[in-house]
Image 1: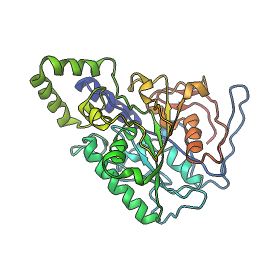
Image 2 (image 1 turned 90 degrees about the vertical axis):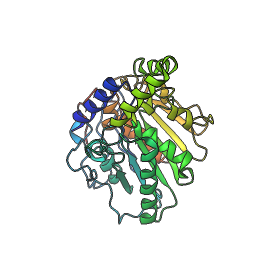
Image 3 (image 1 turned 45 degrees about the vertical axis):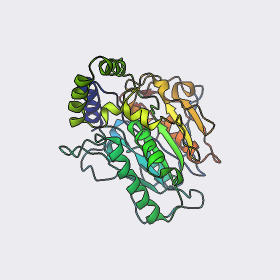
Length: 338
C-alpha cells in the first residue's frame, strides 16, 4: 500500500540522513477530463467509453506483485495513434512500485488513447516491493533498456516521460549520460527536485560533516548506501547532483519539460527546487491553480489538478480546463468524479 511506501521513504530519510522522494502524473487526447473552478463545481467530461475506472485518491495505489503493472499499462500490442504518436513511460518514485505509484494516471492515460508503459526499477535485493533504492546510475540503465523495448514494440520514434519524485531525477541521468535525449519528446515531472532537497537541514549537515570529518562522513555514507544507494544522492550538494548538473544544464535541449510542484511538499525542501529556469520548461504550482489543493508529496500522484496539467502538457494542442477540487494530504481528492 501507499502508506507503506511513504513510511519507507520517511523512515529512510530520518534514519539515514538523506533526501528523497516518490512519483505521479497523466495525459489526455482530443477529449479532456474537466471539472470546475472554485466558483463553480461541475462534473467531469470523460473520454467516450472509458475502459478503465479512474480513482483520484490513495485507494488507487495497489500493492501486491511488484512486477504487475497498473491498469492500462504494458499492453505490448498497443500501437500509438496519429493523435498520440509517442508512448508514455511512467517512472515511479523512491520506495514505490509501478502499481503503487501509477494507479490513477496509468488508466487515465489509457482511457485517453495513449499507449502506456511502466516499470519498477532499482528494487531492493532484500525486498522487491521497495523500488528505487539502488544508485540512480544503475537504475538509469534499467530505464534505458525499458525505453528501447517500448520503442521496438511500438515502432515509435520517441517516448514521453512522466515521473514522480525520484522519477524526476533518475531519468535526467538517462537523458544526459545514456543517450536518452534523442529518444524523449516531452517530460512531465511531478514533485521534482533539480536542486536536490535540504530535507530540513540534513543536506547542509551532510555537507558540513564532509568538510569537518571526511573519513567519518565517507563511512556514514557507505553505511547509508548499503541500505539505500539512491537516498543520499537526492541531498542538495551531493556528489551525484554535482556530476549530473556540473555543466549547468538542467533542462536538456530538445526535450520539452513541464514541472508540477506543491507548496506543501514535505520531502522536497524547499519545494522550489522543482523550478526549471529554461526556455524549454513550463512550471506549475498546484496551489496557484487551486487554493483547495492541499496535496503533499505523495498525494500529487492521485491529484486531479496534476492529472489535467499532465494531460495538457502531453497534448498541448487540445488543452482541457484545469479543475479545482478539495485534495487532502496523504489521501487525494476527497470527492472527485472518476
